[in-house]
Amino acid sequence: MASAVSPLAPKKVPTMPAIAGVRLATGAAGIKYKGRTDVLLALFDKGTTVAGVFTRSKCPSAPVEWCRAKLKGGKARALVVNSGNANAFTGKNGRASVAYTAKIASSAAGCKPGEIFLASTGVIGEPLPAERFDGVMEGLVAQAAPGRFLDAANAIMTTDTFPKVATATAKLGEATVTICGVAKGAGMIAPDMATMLSFIFTDAPISAEALQGLLSKGVTDTFNAVTIDGDTSTSDTLLAFATGAAAAQGAPRIEKASDRRLAPFREALHAVMADLAEQVARDGEGARKLVEVIVEGATSSKSARRIAMAIANSPLVKTAIAGEDANWGRVVMAVGKAGEPADRDKLSIWFGDTRVAHRGMRDSTYDEAKVSAYMRRPEVTLKVALGLGTGRDRVLTCDLTKEYVTINGDYRS
Image (cartoon, rainbow, N blue to C red; front, side, top):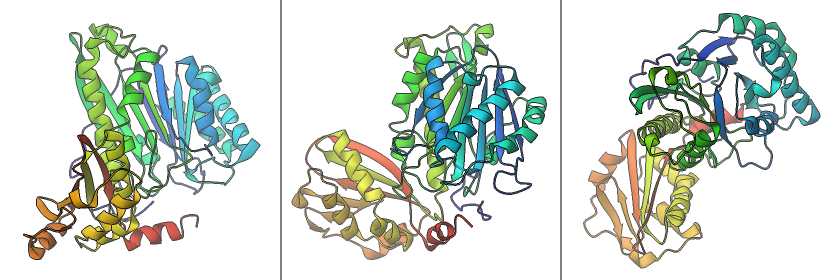
């Protein structure tokens, strides 16, 4: 893990309330390093429903394949997550490792292997020593306790510099339900699904089908609108677990995502996901600036998204921002290469509130000193107006610094 906390880290960490029906424990199994906390176990009461969204990588990890298969059952009793090893590109050994981990976890937790969900993060291509879970699983089950979400977030960090947690409440019927989420991710971030690893917990009584609908739609403008380096991981996993415990307080059971009573919950869930996604962008490896890219006036929202991602993933744009240089020429380049409709002579570009380029040339009122002062801020907004339609979108990224190269140049060592 990186030692220095990102300068973009949130100033305050929220108090994470316990979720009825969820107990958490963390431990050191020695997956990669001895003595380092590297395992998270979450235990769920009977009746807990589950939904998930996973990487679109054509080379998914063994845990991703396991979860996809088990998601069809719609029920969960435990989640096991390890850091230090992604268990990806590990062939038959990888599949055997997830089956073995699920077997020992189900035995310790008193449930079926198909009710165990798994996720791994770390180095790709190294065999996962799943037998090391044997030495800690019984102890984790015994010590699992409510409310340990910050410990959980710490346990799954790799190059992250701070634990990522978020929480919200919402009305469901006359009852108040709670949502808590944790995430990890700082590099190999271009989710194209959900996020690196993120786990969301709620006491709301929601069916697996309804939860899946909320999750699948919710990723679009949250986790899927974040990029650090344009690289989609083999292991990206977003899982949501609903214990249904709030039914005891009068919360109605929800069967369909279209249920109108879900509106406040949907908004709260979106807020938690958006918060976690922004924290991932803030913790981009070596990042010193949080960058918001807005594209408007496109022929469609999909076109706006593609152009925004072309800008956000451009090493030249990102290094210019790291150097506090409002180099709109690089933005023009990124717009032009995106493969989407654009007209050079209708294009306008802003850094913050200052329009730097307009209708195919530098803005006539451009003030270098004003823009340079703006670029020294830790949070920068870059806006492009295409002048072609009403399509609009927004993505988050960060700058690209020398530290990113340093972190990734010796990642496996």
